[in-house]
Image (cartoon, rainbow, N blue to C red; front, side):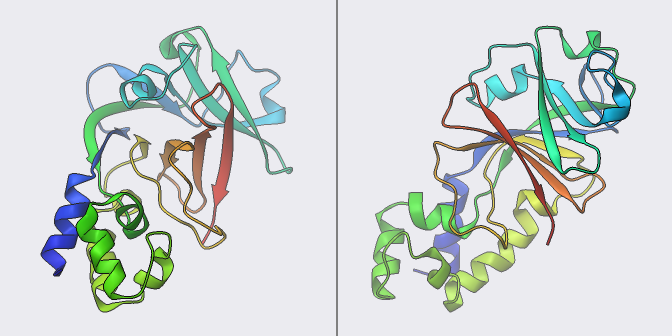
Amino acid sequence: MILDDLLAEGESLRRSCFTLSVEGRGDIAGYWRGERPDYTPPALRRHIMTLDSQLLVQTGMPMGYASIGFSEVEDERFYNVLRSQQPVTALGCTGLPLYATPDTSFPPLAAVCLYGSEKVAAWLKTLGLQRYEYTRAALAPLGRAYDDIYTERGDLFRDNVDAIVGGWHQSWPEDDFYMPLEMRRAVLTLREAEPWYELWQVAGGPNFNVCERIT
């Protein structure tokens, strides 16, 4: 296998997503910061973002409400997931409007090792590795070369994007392993990073978790 082959594996695994930007056009898909009057008193919570749940539905995540967002409880690093049956534009949010654009998300090397074709498994075998040994594969010359390209194509490195809905997730320094597919990253925020924020759907169900990421 050569680099072009491994990149082709990555391209074949691209997942649908939406990029959100305050500079977009069309219908308002969400809000960044500001306040959400339906969750009072605002002084106790620092609103991070809210978005139209249909964006998540279109990336394969079932929803039972019209809008979803999350806020931080001040000085506690504890997060509230905010669900509502009201459309996002009816919530009275005072933050920056976000606009959505359909896109695709390029996978990190860990995802290619785990979910790529048998060609990937064969390459790993030449290194004496199994699919789950992606951290060791990243140390091989081909793995390093893929990661260099991922720096250019991955979600975390996009320009002029404030958040991403759906798509592939990446590993962070504090992660012990690459999260399995039954855990879905619903949102990654890029605006004002660091910190980055991730909203995760737990095993396709109604529960969500928020993670704050700092490198």
